[in-house]
Length: 130
Image (cartoon, rainbow, N blue to C red; front, side, top):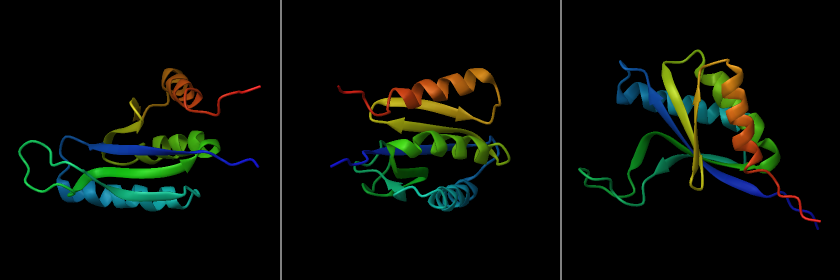
């Protein structure tokens, strides 16, 4: 039986210098809806298991963060969707994390950004086992 493996990815938006928490929350919900249109398995607002220093509530929503479950074949498309989405939004970067690996996706159209994304995807694609 062949099964498609999935990745759970953490997507964290960093707003523009003049963005506030409400705007970042609205942008996060907008990105969530956009990702759900591209057949990701799940896209949920992220919660911290442990309260960060200076906060009192563990399990609180992390403003600007999503946890997205996506099949490995859709990972390149999800990163392309995120990159295209932030181009016309007041978002500085979207940090995408899989396990301990992270990449900052920026609203740039440079070939260097494309190579970084491709290398990131390749490192999390299906491994070839013969």
